[in-house]
Image (tube, rainbow, N blue to C red; front, side, top):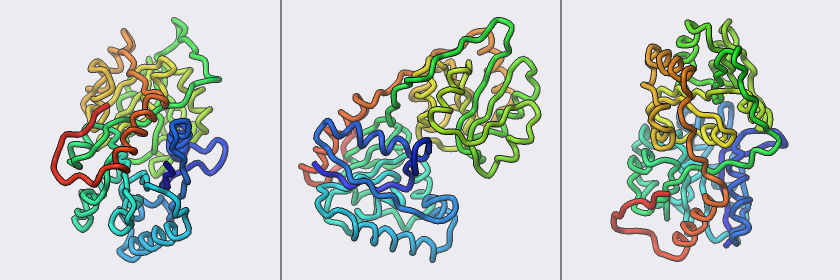
Length: 335
């Protein structure tokens, strides 16, 4: 099978963390007989999702036109279109005759909910790959595979154990935007001198992280640098305050033996053990959870490996290619 993969995020070179899982999934599918032609849909500042969510009607129309032009110059030999982020990459389902399978990561689902004019998009998809059960329940597509994206091997990163005299080492990795809840974590740790917080990432809340006197702010790092930071931490913190897909950093940390404290939102409760779940936006609850973790770390999440994820995706794509679009509701296929 030949697949045309459309994405709004893809590594621009060695060390670029953007959309690395798109490239990794394509590589993992290749030994299973699925070859991918990958096309990146570019947009203005903030990316294609931000353009659709906050841009003008004119900018959204231009994004649709750019999608059409991209399809026109792309390989027509593709049997199926795999669209990472339903908006805007899933839009070809509205006009292309080939099956379109959308990969729903989270932010795209929020956009669908806010734009009623896109209500007809999901039913036109041949299938949906949702990174969490929470997303699958929201989309209610009759042919859905639920699986998180996999993680790459952690070669080159060796876990550095904490010495008894060291404070608890906490790490935040993610986009510095309000929905990720960094403000909650900074406030919670400000009153905990027995911990050391490291912040990795970039975005509109960069100044919030850079000005925090009790946090070490590293900015955006390459994937290998992130693994090195995680290897030297005791606890990953994911304090999201809004709907989440399933942040892959949870699995990247778990692959190194690093447990996670995470907000009880989105797909996080599906993979983070109960002892690591915290009320979102509750500074007091986060302080209590961190103090408890200093006494006994929670269990780590189970790690989805790329071979296992790719095998499920390959079976699902072949089903979407060989069977007609679903016309009656049925339950999603969960991994």
